[in-house]
Image 1 (cartoon, rainbow, N blue to C red):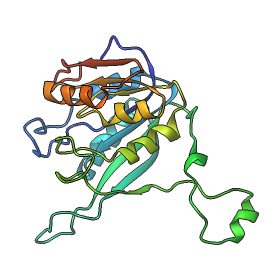
Image 2 (tube, one colour):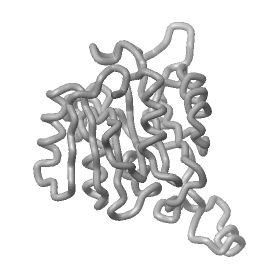
Image 3 (cartoon, rainbow, N blue to C red):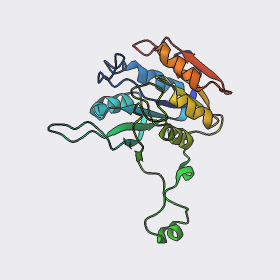
Image 4 (cartoon, one colour):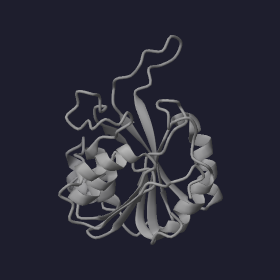
Amino acid sequence: MPELEQVDLVLTDPPYGENQAFWDKEKPNDIIWDLMKEKILEGGCLYYWGFWGHADWVLLNAKRVKFFPQAQLTWWFKTGRPEKKSYREDTESCWYFSKGEPLIFNPERYLEPYEDENNYKRYGRKGKHPGTVFIASRIFHNHPENVGHPTQKPLKIIKKLIDISSDINSTVLDPFMGSGTTLVAAKELGRKAIGIEIEEKYCEITVRRLAQEVLPFRSNQKFEKDGT
């Protein structure tokens, strides 16, 4: 990762350390935050998926490397395991940070309707900025997007994040590529993409998903535990 070019946007879904799979036994080493900060251009952004219980760790590291917190986004998938003495977990979190003032932010591509019809005239806009809650089904085994990764994110959510925080020919980096959803979304939106993944089988899945790839694509299968 240290030898990579700087990018406009990092969007990644790292291991949560929740033992959902053999590769999910621990969170990334703190050094990943230093590497991401180094590789993002001034004015670029980071979308970092994570478990709500790790919010302190995420925010502490973001503050340490001087990322500016912009928003905490929530994916509401509605389903979830029943808990004996707690609420059903039916959401995941994604933190949105910037390196300085964001240079690219395109909310007008996803404006939402006003509840009050008078607001269209009052504000002179076609709708309000998108909110922080994204609704989409989980990618279970019978979902049409499923490619065999246990924590796969919905393509429509990833595309929306990339579309809002980058432009055509922007470069997107995912240092925990998984099954390649970030790269697929980047391709469909006309962005360049760099993916890093330690598991060979997920690299192979990504290559198959990008079989018609026409944009520059790099894959590194040697992403070590400490993020180097």
